[in-house]
Amino acid sequence: MLTFGGMSPRVFLLCLLFPLYPLRAQQVEVLTFPELRERLETGGDTLTVVNFWATWCKPCVEELPGFLAVEDSLRQLPLRFLFLSFDFLREKDRALLDFINTRNIRSRILLFRSQGDNGWMEEVSPQWQGAIPATWFYRASDHLSRFHEGALQKDELLIRIKSYLP
Amino acid sequence: MKKLFVLLPALCLLAMAFRTGDPAGYKPGDKVRDFKLRDVSGEIISLSGLKQANGCILVFTCNHCPFSVAYEDRIIALHQAYASKGYPVIAINPNDAATVPDDSYELMIERAREKKFPFRYLHDESQETARLYGATRTPHLYVLQREGADFVVRYIGAIDNNTEDPEAVTAHYVKDAVEALLQGKQPAIPMTKAIGCAIKWKK
Image (tube, each protein chain N blue to C red):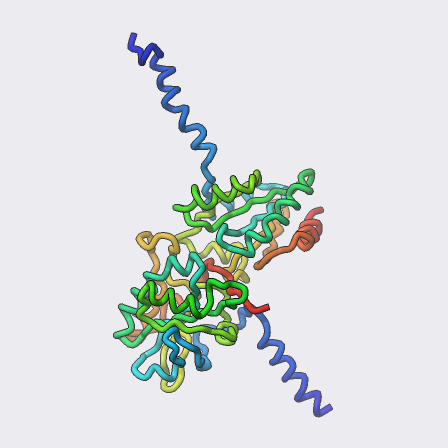
């Protein structure tokens, strides 16, 4: 039987694949707008808070701790947070991953891939003038959709979320 | 009573003038007010000074925003293609340098020199021009067409449909708008939206 330094072919193959596992765990998930739409539409009674931000956007980075604190304090409610970054795709493994790791963020941070399709912003909100940070509140079960362009302080975020929850 | 008739509308106008990020800025078809802004060369530039032009490609942009930086080469290319056809690029930095030190006038001069900007790069220090136009982010483009002594807005929005990858662009909004105007037509798409860095208004 063919062996690789004493190992069976199966074990050898497993050893080849092993280094890939930590790499996979390290990658930042990329999401397109249609994929975002699908996640939102299948959310049922859960209120999704979509925060549009980027590591290079100062007001975005400043409001982030407030969002993370609110997320932490309301874990028992039908609520979930998605942090969608506009960092460039080629930067995702550096800038974005570094950001997540140095701050030890465990929340759902994804890289948003919106290029090539400019109609998507109208679907989020016709009022959106294109600046970030911006936050979109969405619930599929009753088609609740609210949008805020600009930074949101922790207190205001809490008030809004509580007003949207049953 | 008579005083109220004068005072109330005046107060309303005053209040409107100070709204930030006001979507009630210019729309396609609007005639624009002229500006007098300082260029990186030190010269004061205005639209009325563009004697030869058929119009211009106005872009609100800045030194620091990664989206603006990603578009710099494409903005240079637009000027190189259309200045000789009467549509020069004019770049305007609307950001408050106190909030973003990277967007100071001195650093504008440096950036223009570094990238060898072939176009005017103006400092909207009071941010009045940005407010008037209803600019909200960088980059934010306005294609203007001259009609007699006036300049009229013909296109507002994004340069194209892919910030990150110039090779993957499938819709060249500004280029198509200018080409249409050069052929005596109106742009097929007069307005688009895109993500950019929010303009940093004075506090």
